[in-house]
Image (cartoon, rainbow, N blue to C red; front, side, top):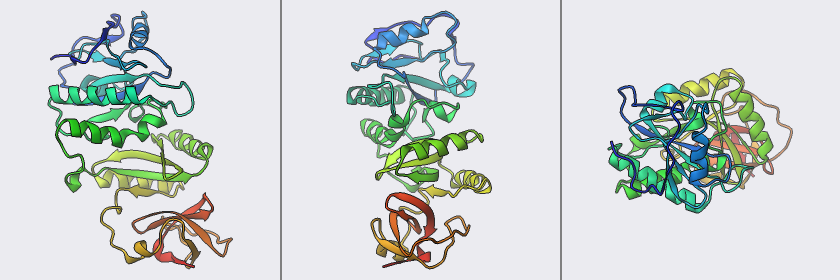
Amino acid sequence: MSNSSLVNVTVWCAEGNYTHGRSGRNIEMVALHHMAGVLSAEECGRIFQQAGRGASANYGIGKDGEVGLYVDEYNTAWANANWDSNCKSVSIELSNSSASGNYPVSDVVLNKAIDLIADIFKRNNLGKCVKGQNLVWHSMYSNTYCPGDYIRGKLDYIVDKVNEKLGLNSNAGSNDNLYKVQAGAFSKKENAENLAKEIKNKGIDTCIITEDGLYKVQCGAFKNVDNAKNIAKTLNNMGYDTYIVGLNESTSSNQSSNTIKAGDKVRVTNAVQYNGQSFAVYFDTYDVIEVSGDRAVIGQGSEVTCAININNITKV
């Protein structure tokens, strides 16, 4: 088992902060993390040299794009707070360009991460890069903010670019679609953060992505739609309105979805939310914030009221 030829700096992790070997497991995926700071590859490695740290990563990409090697790919880094995923993943720490907010990374770091991920995939014969399956991230396995909203919001881009480098088409075939359960969409980040925290406290991992000017709270990324439906049902039983992203976007031919679009003003003709719960209608007209398949998000301006079936509204 080899290491990446992209490595610029080697800072070996201290004994006691990783495990020799992989407990008989093979490398099956790459796990992304952020450094929660603006660090060089060497500075990140020095942290894992601290005796008793109890944590490590295989690689790190510093603020200048240098690649650091800390734990040989043959060995198990302690990164994901989950033993099974640690044994089968190669972990990468990414330097942030700002140690606050949504913890962004620079384009230099992002592009080097794509190069490194593609290299790991190629050498370990991991096949096509698929988000949530063989490209994973820390908060999938632990109640943590890592790797931050910025990186989570770039995952689709990363997957596309990795597959380009591998000579694979990331969008080929409907079986490659991933289904995510969306529990809310807000114009104010604080509202999204409050909802995400509330759901996490109930034992369901969440992430916040920024899309179409909204902060969207999503749970999971599943290849099997039944898994997404199970999470959606659990959230519905807890009282949350949910929507499965990826279920209708590419296949819906409902004529109403062509006539109602984001930005339209509509009148509610049947006050039933998308999840079947009724709601009080306080306004004569609502603004359409988002449309996907037979589902529309309506509200006042950019403030969300609810999601509703497009057959229950009419354009004015």
